[in-house]
Length: 348
Image (tube, rainbow, N blue to C red; front, side, top):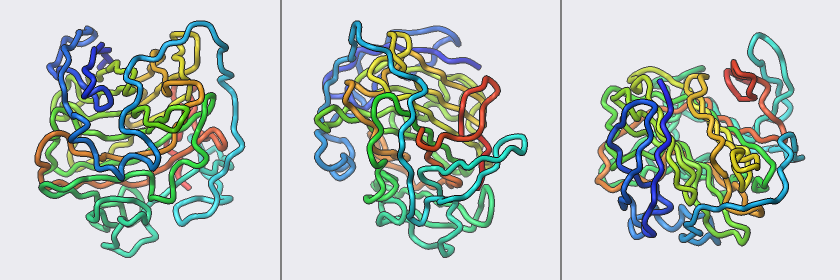
C-alpha cells in the first residue's frame, strides 16, 4: 500500500470543496489533475453548516510565507473540557500495554447513555438532520452505537458535536488536535457521493473568523485497492491519495486524524502536519500541509460526514462508536509503532 500526492489547480467555484480527477494512477506516481468543479458553492451545505459569523468564501490561494519563526512543536495549551454528558471528568484511561494515564479527552461518547432508538439529533449530542439514533443493533464495545442515517434527497450531517459544543476555545497556531472513532459499513452501504464522500473534517478559520476551508479525509474508491481514501486541506488544495485494502463491510474499523496547527507546513520551515491512522496503522503523514491559512487562524469545529456530494443520496446508514476528540491540553496517552502520540486503543 502507499500514498500518492496529487497536485490540483482549482477553479474559483470549487476551491473549498475538493476537486481532482478520481481516475486511479499507478501506485507511487503523481498526476496533475485538470480543474474540475465538483461542488460549487451554490450547491454547498446549508447555511447553518457554516459556523455563525463565517463567510462562505475564503482566500482560495495557497498560503505561503517566507521567513518567520518556527513554532514550538511541544507547545501546550491549558484548556480542559469539563461537564457535558459526553465529556469525561477525572476518569483514568488505560493506554497500550496496560499503562495507565490521567488522560481526559475533550469529548467522548460511547452512546451507552441513551435509550435504544433515542434520537441523536437536535444537538444531543449531534446536529444530525433528524435521523441518527442510538442503536443496540451492533456495537464496537458495550451495548450500543450511533446509527447514522441518510435518506433520498436528505442531508447527512453531524457537525460541531452539537450547536453548543464547538471546539472551545478554538485551537490556535502551535496547538494540536486528535479525532478518533470506530465505524462499521453495512454490506448494503453505497459509497456513491460524486465523486467522493466526505468523512472526517476539521474546519479552519481566517484571522477575522471567516471560513478558511476544511482539513478533510474523503472516502474515494471504497471497493478498490487504489485511491481508497484521499485527504486535502481546502485552500491549500493538494491531494494525497491512499492505496490499500478496500473498505470492509460488516466489520468495525478505527480511524484517527491528527493536526498540528500552523500556517506553514513542516516542509516550508513551519510545523503544520496531518497524520491519519486506519486501524492504528499510519496511512498519511503529511508534512507538506499548512493546517490553517494564516498565523491567527484557528481550528474551531469537527464535522462527521456532512453534505452528500452532487447527487441524490441513496437510503444509507452506517454505525459509529467510541468517538473521541483530544487536544494538547490533555494529550492522548498512547503512541503508535513509530512513537507518534495518538489516541489509539484507549478506552475509559
